[in-house]
Length: 104
Image (tube, rainbow, N blue to C red; front, side, top):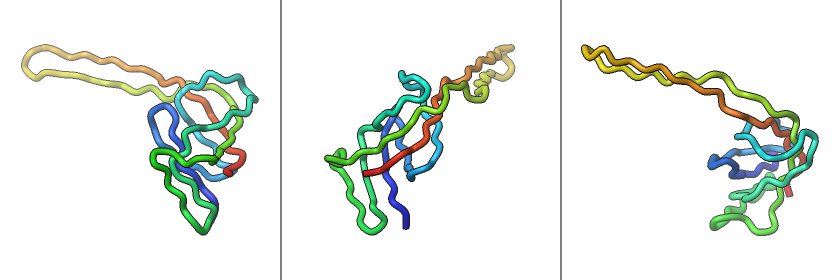
């Protein structure tokens, strides 16, 4: 089994493996920058799993910012039947693509 970690960013949790590509909510980092993802909630070396309470001390997950992009359009459509009310709104989420480097 491969080493993996569970990290939290943008209010969401992601299970990552070294070499993975990952889309997360927009981060304030330049393209090509090396960043450290914190907090690390759990980390496994392939044999043993360490779970933090709430985070694992001295665990590191490093990543590189590949690009910034916008996601697909998400449409929210509201309607009330027989009332003549309908409302269509949508947005495109700002995303950052990360390449996971190392898990320690």
